[in-house]
Amino acid sequence: MKFLTLPSGDEMPALGLGTWQAAKGEVARAVTTALDIGYRHIDCAHVYGNESEIGEALAATDVPREELWVTSKLWNNSQMPEDVRPALENSLKALGLDYLDLYLIHWPVQLKNSVMYPEAGSDLIPWTTGHMLETWSELEKCVEDRLVRNIGLSNFSTKKIAAIIENCTVHPAVSQVEVHPYLQQRQMCEFCAEHGMAVTGFAPLGSKHRPAHQIKDGEPSLLDHKIILSIAKKHSTTAGKILLAWAVQRGTSVIPKSTNPTRLEQNLEAADKILDTEDMDLINSLDSGYRFLDGSHWVKEGSPYTLENIWDGE
Image 1: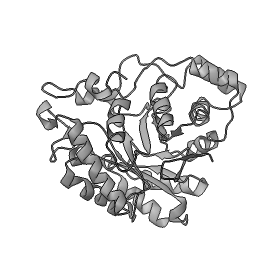
Image 2: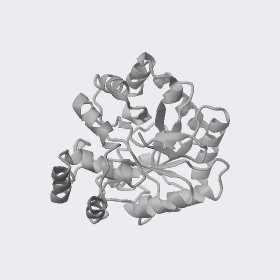
Image 3: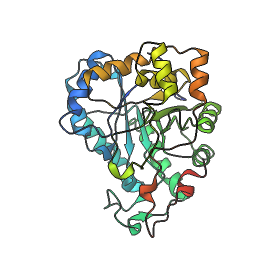
Image 4: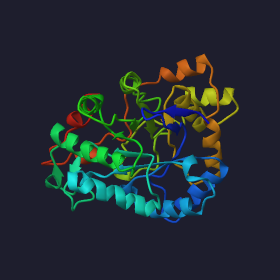
């Protein structure tokens, strides 16, 4: 397994298990299987609603805590300074852990504390740089108190991350964003390399099983693209393995979700798959800036959010 070194000196496994959209009753079994076959990186979030199940699997494993990498995320309704630490402590309690390896601000979007998902624009609170820095300051205190070892951002633009870097005490460790051949995030990867951060890519296979309201008609498929299929045939492997191998080989970490034991094993094997220069060049040619998860669910009538101010044109 390859590792990515963070500003703290900690090493994050390059391939982990994503748990978004893992069905209740299945996620604990999937995490147990993953740990048994060699996974050491588990990606979680409060909003996924399954941290307690994941905690059951973590409690039952014989893998030493120091060998595990567990990430969770601060949800949008807990970004007020007084809510940050309690939110982290709730995730720790659910997961049965004394500390997290990484805690991310889930979105640059703020909800009212009583709202889990917005039903109207009035459920959303405008995002400001000042608010972001207050939230970050509270996360820094959580690092000081050893509740979390590293902190970072999810779904943030380089512009927003730069504002944190200019004003922080604890340097952001990771930027987690959608990454796959159609959305290669070259600007983000270059920015993070310049600032000593790691990039973790979600939706590496196209996130086919995300909620129906987030799926667009006629969207492109990664697993069925002729170039990906031709490279998979050349290597006598699957399209999914090629997509994951590409992500790891270019220096990012990746967190595919699966609850299928065979697929879990295939995904883990992909971390050590080597693609040649021709393969990488062909896949690199597929970049089109296409987002499968474009953030449009935050853009409602009366909402302070637009796709432009969420992504800053990136």
